[in-house]
Length: 71
Image (cartoon, rainbow, N blue to C red; front, side, top):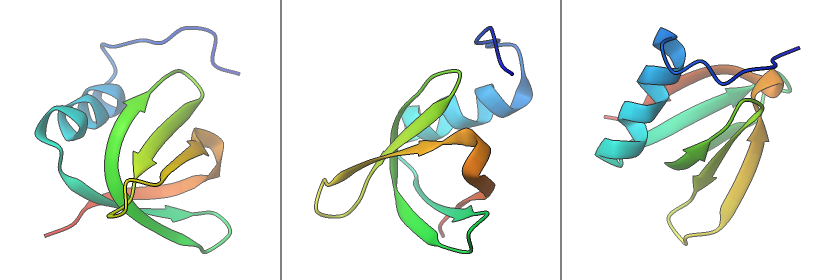
Protein backbone atom coordinates (compact mmCIF):
# COMPACT_ATOMS: atom_id res chain seq x y z
CA UNK A 1 0.00 0.00 0.00
CA UNK A 2 1.21 3.48 -0.89
CA UNK A 3 1.73 5.68 2.14
CA UNK A 4 3.63 8.63 0.63
CA UNK A 5 3.36 10.57 -2.58
CA UNK A 6 6.99 10.36 -3.71
CA UNK A 7 7.48 13.01 -6.39
CA UNK A 8 10.99 11.73 -7.11
CA UNK A 9 9.63 8.54 -8.71
CA UNK A 10 9.83 8.48 -12.52
CA UNK A 11 6.20 7.37 -12.87
CA UNK A 12 4.98 10.31 -10.78
CA UNK A 13 7.18 12.72 -12.76
CA UNK A 14 5.85 11.32 -16.05
CA UNK A 15 2.23 11.88 -15.03
CA UNK A 16 3.07 15.37 -13.71
CA UNK A 17 4.54 16.20 -17.15
CA UNK A 18 1.34 14.95 -18.82
CA UNK A 19 -0.64 17.28 -16.53
CA UNK A 20 1.58 20.30 -17.30
CA UNK A 21 1.57 19.66 -21.05
CA UNK A 22 -2.21 18.89 -21.11
CA UNK A 23 -1.33 15.93 -23.33
CA UNK A 24 -4.26 13.70 -24.33
CA UNK A 25 -3.64 10.21 -22.98
CA UNK A 26 -5.06 6.71 -23.26
CA UNK A 27 -5.54 4.64 -20.11
CA UNK A 28 -5.91 0.89 -20.50
CA UNK A 29 -7.48 -0.58 -17.38
CA UNK A 30 -6.97 -4.09 -16.06
CA UNK A 31 -10.62 -4.75 -16.97
CA UNK A 32 -9.76 -4.13 -20.63
CA UNK A 33 -11.62 -0.81 -20.74
CA UNK A 34 -9.86 2.08 -22.47
CA UNK A 35 -10.36 5.67 -21.30
CA UNK A 36 -8.99 8.76 -23.01
CA UNK A 37 -8.64 12.32 -21.86
CA UNK A 38 -6.34 14.89 -20.28
CA UNK A 39 -4.89 14.23 -16.84
CA UNK A 40 -6.11 16.86 -14.38
CA UNK A 41 -4.45 15.69 -11.16
CA UNK A 42 -2.96 12.73 -9.35
CA UNK A 43 -2.48 11.76 -5.75
CA UNK A 44 -1.00 8.69 -4.10
CA UNK A 45 -4.03 6.57 -5.00
CA UNK A 46 -5.88 8.04 -7.97
CA UNK A 47 -5.59 9.92 -11.25
CA UNK A 48 -8.38 12.18 -12.52
CA UNK A 49 -8.92 12.70 -16.24
CA UNK A 50 -11.28 14.89 -18.25
CA UNK A 51 -12.66 13.68 -21.58
CA UNK A 52 -13.45 15.81 -24.65
CA UNK A 53 -16.73 16.91 -22.99
CA UNK A 54 -14.84 17.86 -19.80
CA UNK A 55 -16.53 14.95 -18.00
CA UNK A 56 -14.21 14.03 -15.12
CA UNK A 57 -13.37 10.44 -14.21
CA UNK A 58 -11.28 9.41 -11.21
CA UNK A 59 -9.28 6.22 -11.77
CA UNK A 60 -7.71 4.16 -9.01
CA UNK A 61 -4.03 3.65 -9.90
CA UNK A 62 -4.37 -0.05 -8.99
CA UNK A 63 -6.80 -0.44 -11.92
CA UNK A 64 -4.41 0.92 -14.59
CA UNK A 65 -2.60 -1.48 -16.92
CA UNK A 66 -0.84 1.31 -18.84
CA UNK A 67 -0.90 5.02 -19.70
CA UNK A 68 0.01 6.08 -23.22
CA UNK A 69 0.17 9.59 -24.69
CA UNK A 70 -2.07 9.87 -27.77
CA UNK A 71 -0.42 11.10 -30.92
